[in-house]
Image 1 (spheres, one colour):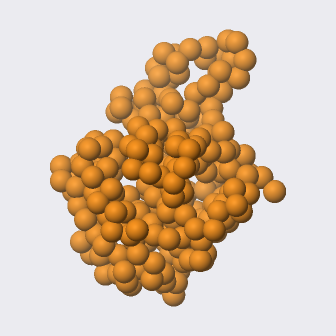
Image 2 (cartoon, rainbow, N blue to C red):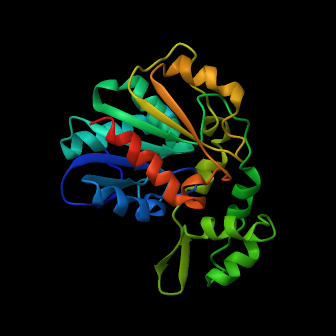
Length: 259
């Protein structure tokens, strides 16, 4: 059995697992982890399968990714955890809460709804697939090649955090592009209409994001009747990076009520 890679911040306290979004990695959340650790949590920055330093697999579904978290907790000896997930990570958290409620004390979902999303990452994935590391020997050249497919510089910089040196002079990617290119439907998969979790949870929406619409609120309450829902103003889908202070305060305040 393969166990997910994690970076653990903090030495004691309640266990808080953070699950990144699509094409991200746990270390994207390092600044937030330090803040949560200061509140008395031991924070686990987890790389989900086919991302970061975790294992690669041709199997890619939220059922598998929720089981990965269960396996991680069993390997660590955890009985109860708090979980926070952004985007794809939020979908994993929802499946975890519905399928393994006995493991979760409470959970937070950042800017994703239980609904099905149409595939919308193909341009990015196609661009990453064009990075030929037999010819690309620097991050600057990789950025130049990727700019033909991804126009937004900040998005490219986020994606290029996945670059690493396999050996001196040889770059590689920490994401399994071949599998992820075929997983568009799985990534956008919605929750089964029949599943539900009565665990306490917080859904945080970015005001300028279209990932959670007002029309999605009944669906959130259907699946998660004890959900609180809040909005961070003037931010998009990357709400935790665009206004980290307010995002942290919202999570801190809500977690404080779950003790």
